[in-house]
Image 1 (cartoon, rainbow, N blue to C red):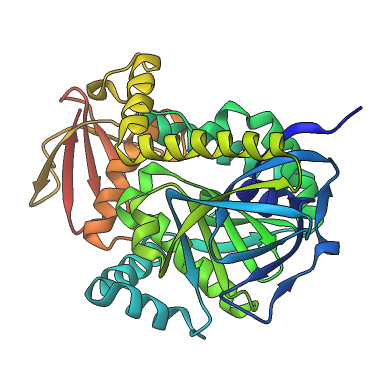
Image 2 (cartoon, rainbow, N blue to C red):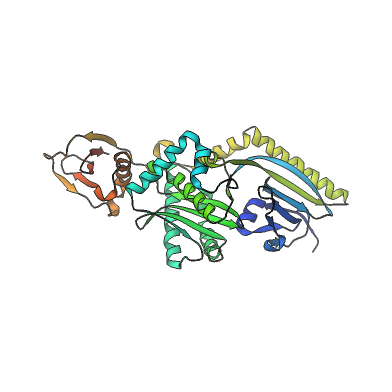
Amino acid sequence: MGPKHKSEHNFFLDFFKKNETPNCYTGIEFIHSPNTQLPKNELITINELSNIYLVHLIPNYLELKIQPDLQLIKIPQLNNGYGINLNDYSEVESYVKDQFKKYAKKIFTRFKRLQLCFDIKFVEYSDNITEEEYKFLMRRFKEMLERRFEQRNDRHDKLEHWDNLYQSVLPMLKNKRASLFVIFDGVKPIQITLHYHLQNILFSAIPAYDIDYDKFGLGNTAVYKKIEWCLENGIKFIEMGYGDLEYKRRWSNTIYKYNTHIVYKNGSGKIKFQAYLQYLKITFKEYLKKKGIKESYRKYISILKNKDTPSKKKGISTYKEEDLGVFPQDEKNTLLNMEDEKNSFLRKAVYDFQYVSFAPSQSISVYRSDLIQSSYLITDNKKYRRITF
């Protein structure tokens, strides 16, 4: 069998998730830490011989060396990548203050309020995880992703291939190439992040959180604790990945670009011409991206696929709130068990009340009105709030 015409790769995902790199490269250096060389023999090479390699999404903080008999065309991509460089930090509080300035106080306040209101613990799972724990956490992980993306009237690409993800992550945990960072409220996971590990780089791949706790900023708390863990474990760079999301912009002190490499063999005029055609094709795609045409097309296709309108978003219960001065003694009310799943629709309202009232879970009582339809009372015996659906 002769050589392939071309070989195409998503460098970012192959490198961070699989520890793979095309065999057109002979070495890789991480420029944020010049003394950290990522040796070739620690990477699984893709054993194929191609006339042309198209290698997309290469972070520009990685310097790649190609084989001496190959030629390279480098094309800048429009995509932004995001990262947290911890080389100058030894404690998470200093990073947050430098990165957020005046907003840092809100980060700390939400973090403390979360711990005040709930029985919070933080657990990092890797090779210590049991199969039962893995099944439990991944089931909860999927539930949170589904509910969050139903709320957004969108679909997460990982949910489309969940079985593959489920099968691949456990072996990586056992080999310490991945970890699950979990925030618990009691025994209930309320935030989970899947990380991939490559020497002193942590790739924060997939975060999910319980939208009922939205007021408490679980996403920020997860990044806060992730930075703390990295500093304690000698990890100096957190890769936040591509995808232009607000929380990445706020937390990242390193915003970088990606490159596409066209790597091809010397000598043949036909191969040079093929490489040039690939160059024209890729630069045209980047032009469409720059003009917003590609994004507009993607949104249009997404709207066509989605049957729900924004006004019918799932996962959100709307209700009216009324703060009362005293407990309504003249009403008949039934005390509810909030551990019962049939009352789960009330949890967001309860947690929102806890947030503004600084109220621990053990102080909260929830009642259903026996006189007013779809009306409930939340109290910590100091404040009283009626909610009506």
